[in-house]
Length: 360
Image 1 (cartoon, one colour):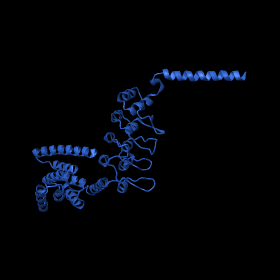
Image 2: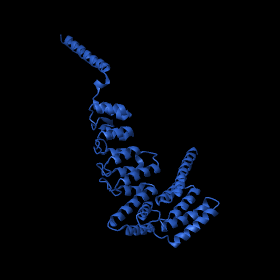
Image 3: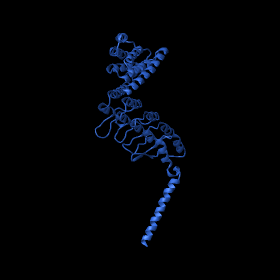
């Protein structure tokens, strides 16, 4: 009798399992998963229309239903992870919470996740919407720290790293924000130990500029200009400082007088460009013209001629910077038009050089 009961029980369990399985195969997807789970799938796959429809139906925009490792994150965090730019736009339009921290790993908000995954376009969108650029995880690491630590994405180029770091610095990222675990570090300290020289220079320039701005907050434009000019002489090659000098120069009633020494360097450098017959011979005129722009940072023609020397030397990025400084100083429209045309040519030359290098 006992065996018969056990056999009947086993049969009932079998039919229950079978019926449940058949039901799951016959039910539509919408009946098997919640709105939030379906939204998570739409976000992960970049299906904007499906995501919009699910939000219209009332899906919780901040529900942590996107699987990531052993944890779950919000739709915005998921879109930031996978670089789903159009999905991010939709979620931000619908009011997704920017500052929710994930329950996976160290506890990152969407901005830190986008930076950690080096999704530059998503980072721009989040910053434009007002994401807290200095929010930190449980270890005190900020988005800038993640940007400086390029180990998160193997093979990530220095150029892309600099682009990301500049984005964050322009939004007010703190170069000295300290971590709270192990040996105390900060974006600047970490870069000094692990980053390329260009990155360290950028962070140090930003720190100097901010310190100087704080000290000069009460000064007149003329006094600020003179202070920045002195700082530029102390740190030649500091492009952030140079940019401030140019900005302040444009606010003055009249441009400062060009020193005679700068004029002599300009004439000598320009003549040597014409005499140079090879790239190595262009090194001297480049040096002379750089010194001229250091002495007279508001002298437009010096930047134009410097750009010419750098262009001939194959230093297209530096030539672009010099031409941009020239345009900042508001030359006559005809000259400005020519400079913009040269900028387009420089970009073409740079792209060609990159392609050629990849083929080798």
